[in-house]
Length: 141
Image (cartoon, rainbow, N blue to C red; front, side, top):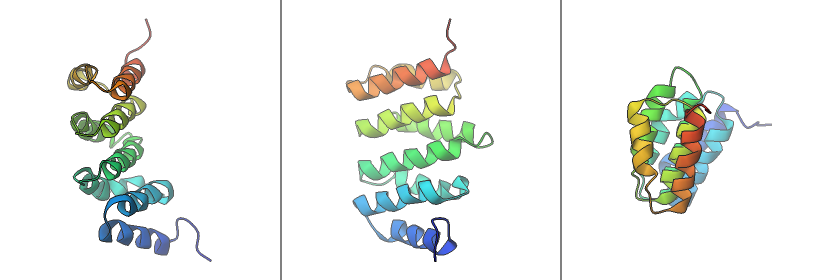
C-alpha cells in the first residue's frame, strides 16, 4: 500500500508536473506542496512554474514558494522571488504573492517599497492582500 509521501507517489507527481500543461500541471504541483516532506525539494519545480503561461500554475508556484519560505534559511531568498511576482500579469498571482510575503514575515526596505507600489493596484483583491502583508510586517503601534 502506498501513502502520500511514498517515493513512488512523489515521483509520479513530479512526472505529471513535468509532462503536462495547464490545470493538470498546477494540480500536480499543488499535490506535491501538500505531500512533499521536504518542501525545499520543490524549489526547482516552483521556479519553473513561475514562468508558466497559466496564471493558475503560477499561483500554485507561489504557494510552493510560501511553504519553502517557512524555512528560516530559505525565507530571505524566497521573499525576494515573491517580490518579483507582485508585478505578475494575473491579479491572483499578485495577491497570493503579497499574502505569502506577509505570512513569511520578512520585510526590508525593498520589500516595503514593492508592497507600497503594489498597494496602488487596481485590483481590490491585490490591494487587500497588500494591506494584510503590511499589517503582518509592521508592528502594531
